[in-house]
Amino acid sequence: MVGGYMRKKTGSSRLLLNFLHEVQNQSPEKYLKHEDLLKVSKATGIPLWRLYSTASFYSMFSLKPRKKHIVRICSSLACYLEGSEKYINIFKNPECYDKYTIEESSCLGLCAQAPSAMVDEIPVSLRDVEGILRNPEKIKKGFLKQGSENFKSFNPVIMKNIQEINPESIEDYIKIGGYEGFKKAVKMLPENVIDIIKNSELKGRGGAGFPTGLKWET
Image 1 (cartoon, rainbow, N blue to C red):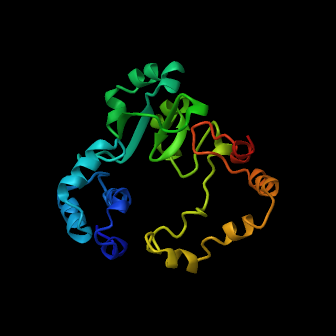
Image 2: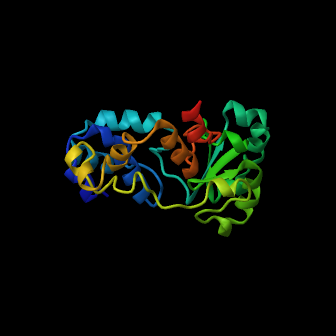
Image 3: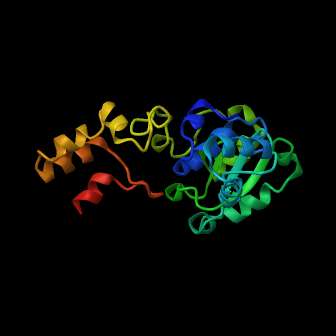
C-alpha cells in the first residue's frame, strides 16, 4: 500500500493528505486500515495520532469499510435551499445501501449547479443520482447529465508533476520549467497579462467557477 513516492518523502507532513488519499484509493473497501496507517507513519515519520486525527476530520476519508460505490450528497446551504434534504430522505432506502455507501457531505464546491452530489468522485446533479443508483453501469469517468461542459475529464497541467518531483525543492521545480511563465509576465504590460488569462478561460476555485481574468481585472 505504501508507494515508492511516499517512502522518498520521509517526514514531509505537508503531503499528509496526498499520502492518505493514495492509500485509501488503493483499498478495495475504500477506507484507511489501521495497518496501512502504521505503514504510512513508519515510511514518512508522521505520528500515527496525527494520521488518525486528520483522517477522522475530513469527510472524504473513512476509517471503516465502505461499499464499491460511494455517493456523497451535499448538505450545505446552497444545496439545502435547492431541496437536497428531500433527496437525502429518498436515498435512505435499503435497496440503495446494498451497493452504495451514501454519505452526507459539507460543501462539494459545486454551488453553481445545486443541489449537487458526487458519485465515486464524479460531480453530478443531485437530481440525477436516483437514476444512477438504479443503473450503476452508467457510472464512468466524466459522466454528467447537467453541467458537463464545466466538468469534462481532463489531463492535469499545473499539478501533473506532483508525484514526480520534491515539492519542497525549488531546484526540482525549475528543472521542469518552473517560473518560465513568471519570467515572461514581468516583461509584459499588466493589461496584456490579463488578456492572456481571460483567453485561457481559467476559472476561480470557488463553487461558481468565476472567470479568473475578470477577477484580476476588477
